[in-house]
Image 1 (spheres, rainbow, N blue to C red):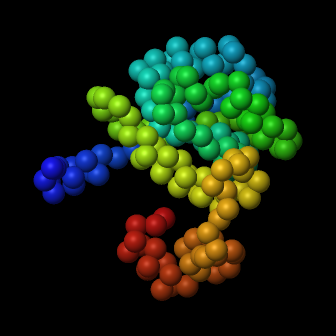
Image 2: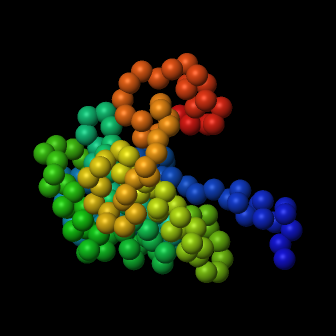
Length: 180
């Protein structure tokens, strides 16, 4: 049986999010068009070889104006190389792009901590479900089929509360809870 310190150290391992602002990180941004071509994929993996075998989740989206809109959340329990740019995933992504006249296609990677042995599939599933929940909050037309029903609750000014002015108390609560 694991000691409490072993369990705590396990949960302290954090997932990594890679975005276009990070140096030497796997972030895909379409160039020269609104589709992801074989050439785009090959050049992406050539520049990011060390991440090919990593596991975790990814979010297809579009960057337009000053923000990003998620379109599809997926998971990679084998490796991101095998799953993220698979044909059936690309059809979802192109379906998402068809709904937007302007914008740049992007893919964010949320990678699990590196570890030896079998992947923690239940943890990857939990992170994917959480990202889908966040994605449906940001975009009601998220293309995921599974786990897209948002919970029937919200906290005003914090999550799923609609628009409006945020009170000072709510701002203080968000600060206390580490919600930005």
